[in-house]
Length: 244
Image (cartoon, rainbow, N blue to C red; front, top):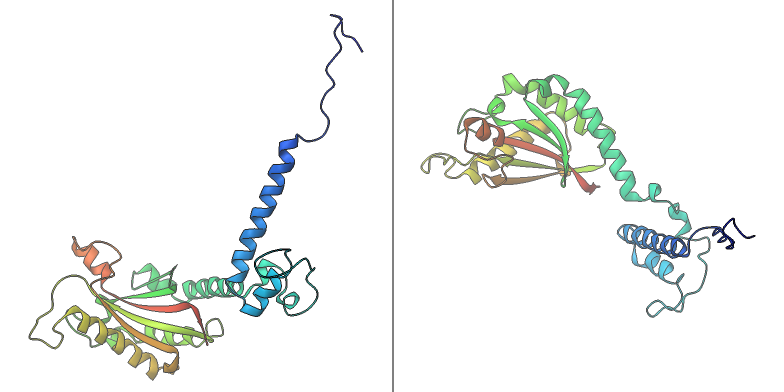
């Protein structure tokens, strides 16, 4: 139909623009790629071969076959059912339980709780547990905390996990002629002392690793007394990839 100026009106384009179709295909392929990358991090070689066989002409596999019911289908076929996601949810629940259990100690800065790349970390402030330069636990002042910690480590939330106890110091040198000539020695002795009492409170010591980090894994810099106090700690780590 001609308009008032005698020219035919341009017919309005119907439907989506052509570029949107290409863009949608690209986004779908990227999503598929990342889901596959995520999935292959938690499945074995046989299941990986099943996935590759579903794609035509990929590598040495003829492909072109739709995946049928079998070992791969039994994984649940959803990201939320992958083992790594289950472990992540379990650690989140364990963190909530730990924060609730240690609420008074967290408020008084005797205990710190938080996740990092190692797993769920429960940090014990060394100044509350040890005298300066010593690895003897102040058990009269800290017995209740260690008993709570033992109960938590034996609870259903983390019962199938592996744990690591790491000793940490500040950067001030120890007495080279004393019982602990280096910070490595002091940190190691403190980690071992904590495990000794946890074992007395009935944890399974076969689930534990011990590690000394000395002064070389500070949380903050050691320029102030507060910073050095923050770095003096014993970390109990519920390991991310540590199921028995």
